[in-house]
Length: 629
Ligand code: GLC
Image (cartoon, rainbow, N blue to C red; front, side, top):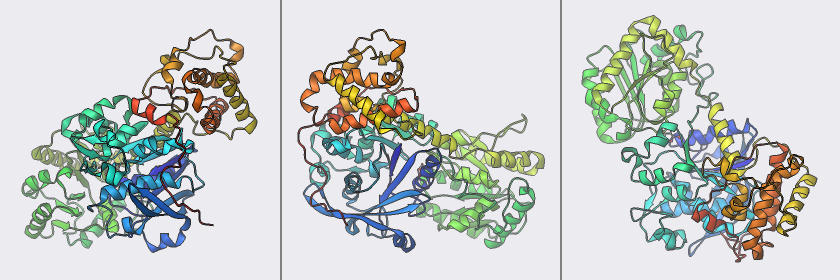
């Protein structure tokens, strides 16, 4: 199972937020499960010299985007055994920051198209393209409206992950033809449109074979207007192909036992001896009164409304009436920065406000603080609460998205496995009272110590979530993740059966009533290849013979569907040959691994139309390409 991750940023190469952390960690976790991952991001000016020196040039040529003919370079390096590709175009990506330019639509449309075009020139052919957030939203549209005309791309699946629905990539409708080079009908039929504008996020969702978001609670929340950012109705419409999978934490990267940024390292066996030392060091570093008995409250955050800064600034004066210290690290809106600076000015020795981002300082704050505040209005997943827990710092969170899914409330009156403190409403005094509850636990050592250990023992590793993604890829692409290499003879045998069936020579009793397995509208390999799932379903389910439940078991579904597809798709048979090979490989793979086939064809209109093999044989995406020798 080969999966290509496509994103606008990835740690450790370039990072502005949590998306990059996920792109840095998830492929590694999947690799451990037997998935073959690769990653592709733009080659921004900000990507350091050290990485650039490791890169090899894989391809140089050009790519068309509407009437434009742009340079396309592909570079590659290998990080932790994972191939990482970089789309090189100085004009689009040689700029001082990642986002926020007038031509962002053009830059990321180019990126999406470049990723698809590069597949011809790299030695990695994915079964699944896993794209992320709005920057990669047009990829599915290009794949299914354009590139799939080339048999090379047929059968390729696309999973799209929403990390933050607030940023959707919304642009004027005039860009459809002129910039995106896509037909206007995609605006009128709503595939790439929301509220009259071009919407990259909506396009990503529309064309995806399956959508995920980064926590189960967020998946539910975004069906409501409060969280849905105008796409709630469309999210609800996608109910059959969307699920939430909680992000994990890179536990190697974030480990208080080995973290080189810390003055004192610790683990859960010595946390009550060493963490107070880390706390005193932090107090010293930030000019706070050095006293391990004073609880230190921390926030490491972008200073924006969504992170609950209004709640914090509303109660900060009341909060400082308690004997506490407050540390803030982060950048963002000036109104919050000013309010916090002013608080620090009035409370020297008790408040430290650092309007900057510094990874080393952040780690020392995670290690030295006692309570970590995340009163977010919404939080798709959130990573900081997981880091805080691993560093023995107790998160105080609002019950939303991934905060709700990863933090369990501690109740001192019941023996509890709670690992933090939660409050329900986006209300400043609920935050204040929850902090006060935390302070009362801090004062009662047995409770506090239990809470700290619970937090440090929380399982936020990627293992569980990576498994969920691997199962999803398996289901969507119909290839077992841990498949053994399939003997060519076996592929040939299954292929032969398919050909036989296409000739109408053998329609056996293997066409199972697929409907009985229907769970979600996942589109399996055969469905896309043959594009006639309804007909397959109509095929009479004849009596099964036990003897045939061997090799033909897996091949049977393909056989029957192939045969029925023939009724209408005969003229395309020759063009579909490479696809048959691919289908045969998948079918044989399934058999080899004795995997249960669960995926069921339920093809949306757009996907069906897009997947139909077309007569025009042009190689989409680019012209004048030449491979570097
Ligand atoms: C976005 C979300 C955040 C999530 C991250 C990674 O930044 O806002 O909640 O943790 O993506 O998925």
